[in-house]
Length: 357
Image 1 (spheres, rainbow, N blue to C red):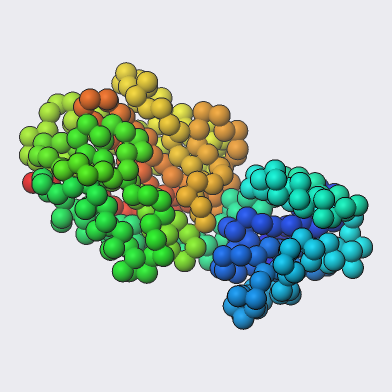
Image 2 (tube, one colour):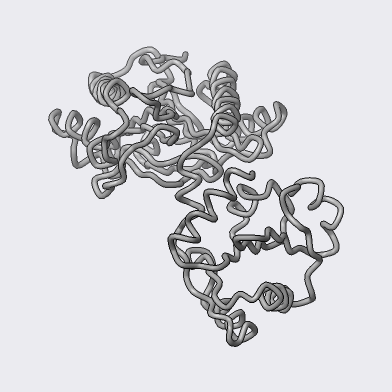
């Protein structure tokens, strides 16, 4: 935590901020290790304060060892004002991405002469580069997703509902240490597999159709995100085989060619150009991938709009797809870490054209 705090202080100095108030729960945990449901961090060049209520006055000191834990007043901003006054600070940054306007107004009124200014996403930028301990946890989360896929392929069959499959996956992950799934599990079969975010429904899986599974394990504070598309039956049409083969080619090509120094836009083109060349460009409407970590969607993005340069330590997904309304769709997704000379793939589930009968 000390290294993270030092990097943040360097950013505060560059931005001309004397202090920052951290209210976003994920950023709070990233900087302090505190997992409680309520609390704020107030960080200056000289002090680390964690403000929380009486419920966490035992838990917080045990988890946030780099912080002085303060039980705040009924209105926590009264305590913030007191601490800033004692430290002689007249300018504090806040997180505009996650603070609603009504809270900002109330906070500014309480602080009075202390300037409350919107800070750039400094902590999110720090979170983009994972250290070895974070990558180790993300590998564990990815391994759990792979185990879940192996488990569920033994249960997938005609006659079982998407919702029952999703529930089984959730139970499996939680029984093996996950706090939850990373997001609402997607199980989309038949025509519904053409829905990029078709979360599990009551639809009963039929024979001779695709089932798209997009899921992940939220494990020890970090997310995994895996997508595989399988075929239920033994007689796929030429169209089933065609779009699967194209998506697999695009995904494998990207995994072979993504490297540090490339922009998110250039990485996106690795998959998009192949799918477009086969005539399915209009059927691939989302980005090639997104950052992954303590949240399921983080920076950077592998998209047509991203000029972010990929740097060693960044973790991203690679997930091209083709979606044909009225027929079905295919997406194949892996989690990767950008390394000094390429990538390391965290997920390892098979991705050949898998037929389950």
